[in-house]
Length: 314
Image (cartoon, rainbow, N blue to C red):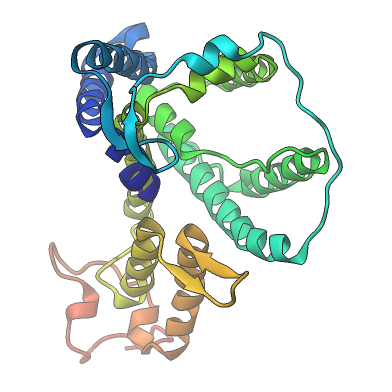
């Protein structure tokens, strides 16, 4: 959410708004093959509208990708012409610095939370429980990150954008994602393709991500609903509420000049540790997940008389 709100959307708010509306219509209204590529069509529409605005309105005065406010073109393809068709990455061994390690450690917490959330979201979308695959997914992510960073590459993670695309297109075929992975590897050695991707205007990304990022959050809410989590129970409500605001708002806790926790990492710790800490002090009736007594009324709202204690005995 902070990336969309502070980096992408402000670069060109009107393009972002048009792309958001077009993509929403494409996802909902198109059928068959066209509905499957609705997100791609949104990107193409964004490219075209940015090009038209550049021709008719000239440069835009706004923040660029670096955050600096300047006069710049919405669609800048100069990097595409300069890029090579074929190029290999430069490999180099890893180096170790404690300051970098301390900064990176909280990211690992975020990656574990993201992996778990994404696997649960895919299971919710497909209707098949994937809980037994959680360990495999997190381990694979860790192994891939170790292999990548050992030769100078970036760490790896699952991405909300991909989960959002699955939710929008309803394509869950593993064969499709094997094919996508192979194409990604091929395109990865084509700097010119990378330049085309890098040239996507910030306003276009703002319109696309505001939908995709929101989808993964709402899928999480759907998981709570299907899990019958009673958010009227303060034992559930308080840590979840705090964690959501910390994660969405990118709240930061600074411990030293070189170590801080923020966003998803801090939110995850608050939810997990906060829940168990509160549970240790909570009265017995809050710890027992009781069924709802009637519509709009939770058993937690009823008087204490006649309620079962922690052992289940009235």
